[in-house]
Image (cartoon, rainbow, N blue to C red; front, top):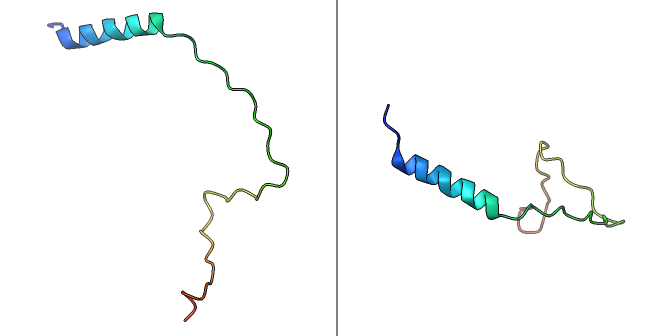
Length: 56
């Protein structure tokens, strides 16, 4: 089975990039706002609001 030269070159470049990439910084915990609006449930139905434009 022949070796793909592009795959080999890609693997070598990735290995070198990983060697010289500094480790990822850990994010500092962010204080949550005390009076935040409740987060919408992503699986719930979107709420419809009635405005003067749509109430006809």
